[in-house]
Image (cartoon, rainbow over all chains, first blue to last red; front, side):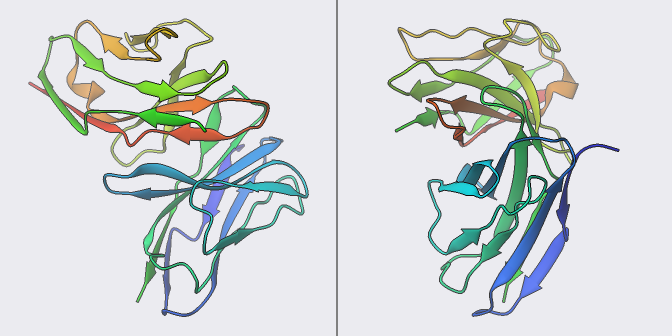
Length: 112
Length: 109
């Protein structure tokens, strides 16, 4: 069953702790993306990657970090430097520029 | 810089009425525009893209470069069209994909 998988669905962390969100795709897509979805804010781009071992900052990269060591994986770390980490996080992938992006089901992170 | 603006947060129409969801963009080159839809409890998915020039579920969208717009239209709305709609833009030689803030469409019976 091809697709893009995010795990876990819900994640709780204490303030001050780093946390890593998983995103895996078996669609053989080159590009992968991380978005943050907040009510009234739409989808805001955190990081994106066009190819293995390369990634670019999006519009709200501060307090986040990523890696792209494998084509199928693009984990996102929410660091303690992120001031408002509680949010819904979406991962996506696409084959080439201008083609359809496929989205995961999202991870809801709550920091208490 | 690339930017997408959806001026309406909420749009409510009655079944059978025409619907238009507005999208304006800012980009200096030749953009690629998309409409994505998120139905309740479902994943965000592609509805249509300007390069295809096709109609999906009765929806169409025309890229107007002069007005930098890509409005989504449907002549007769259905209750099942109720969802969150996002306009998105991909521009330049990179893969950056930028979304608007979304419009929540409610089609009333």
